Image (cartoon, rainbow, N blue to C red; front, side):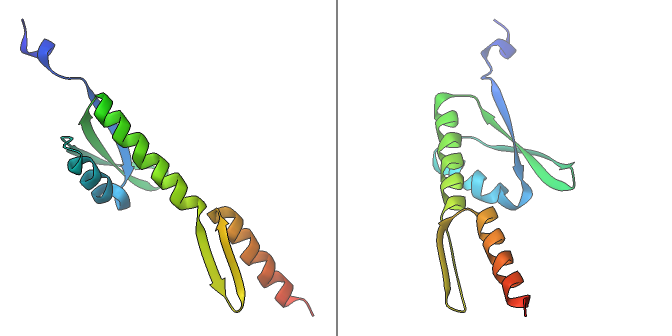
Amino acid sequence: MEDSALEQPQLTILVPSDDVEEVRQELVLRNIDVMQAEEIGFDGAALVALIVPLSTLTVHALVTLYKARITANKHISYESEGLKIKGVDEATLLKLVELRSRRRELP
């Protein structure tokens, strides 16, 4: 049997360069081997390719990380000058803050 037939399939994931260390550490904590490949520019964003073995453990870990990221983005809290906003996503928060600042500009 050839050596290549014994190799485990690999999965390449592209991660924003700001998040590489966090993702890498989470995978390593779960005993998943991680190889870092090159940095890639895509529409002005710096992405880093991480290569991991394709397994149920890896897929489960990636789904868990993704769900945690979605949850974190949904639970933003903001407080300023008596205004308290909780439990909205970033886009909604930005719209609310913009509307408030526009109202303040009115005579």
